[in-house]
Length: 357
Image 1 (cartoon, one colour):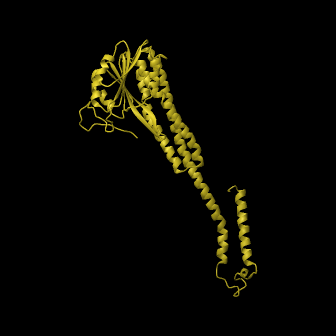
Image 2 (tube, rainbow, N blue to C red):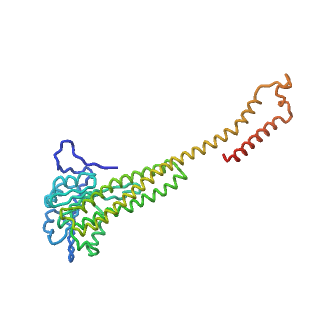
Image 3 (cartoon, one colour):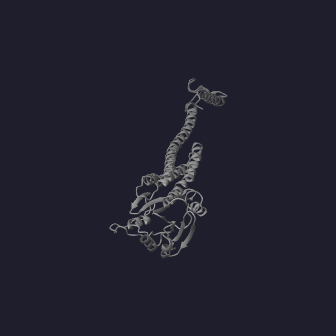
């Protein structure tokens, strides 16, 4: 479920360790610069091209997708004066979401959750460095993300983002991560509702496996979302001057969304625990039904087995008139079956009146 990228014991601190599964493709570096009147977007191939683009009068969003090139990461760290321990955390998967202050920077670790398949939930670590007039983001993998709507808002000038500082951009990125979790939880919740009906009608191993998969997904979502409440709490109480008072109002709303997500996760966890009880109860009821039917069938055959045992013994009617005289009756065999049918019917009627069947 979880991937870890760790150093060998004794390795020097702040050593950048390349992931074994990292591809050989170079990272994609894009720079989106804007203010109230301008907006320009550039994709660069070399880190040397970054410095001329960083105009102090504008807000800059530098996004790096793909962390397979340690040299590029080191050069970017030197350019923005990033502490080597923070760079180490960028490559150290899977980090717990957190926030750490570094001189004139705030380092935030978040995670983007998405469905890799209908039953598999994947997470991608997102590292954010918030500076005075820039936001630097590192994504694990090349490809799409959840931030295209933010880019469109910047390009079109809609909303507050072009009027605010870099802290609002960092908020918008974190808000997109949180908002993307709602449809994930909704999907899990819909699956639990379907499971509730399925476990009542058909408590089999397949539905039990689906229940365990849902519990595993909830555990993973909880692990990724729970620490975000601490992140937003720290940002709302930030005294470094990087987070403006105007942005703290929006952060409070994001904090509420995170709390709502946590409440949903806990509710679904309680529901999944209840569904496990439903499964056990359904299996127990099904077993009881089977045992009741078998017990009734066995009870029906007890008197019949007794009659068959009595008349199955070796008797000699010629030796004595008391030596099983029924064996000489002309219709003794039909009378035996008639007696068996009468006894069985009487027992069934008695069971029905007692509401046992």
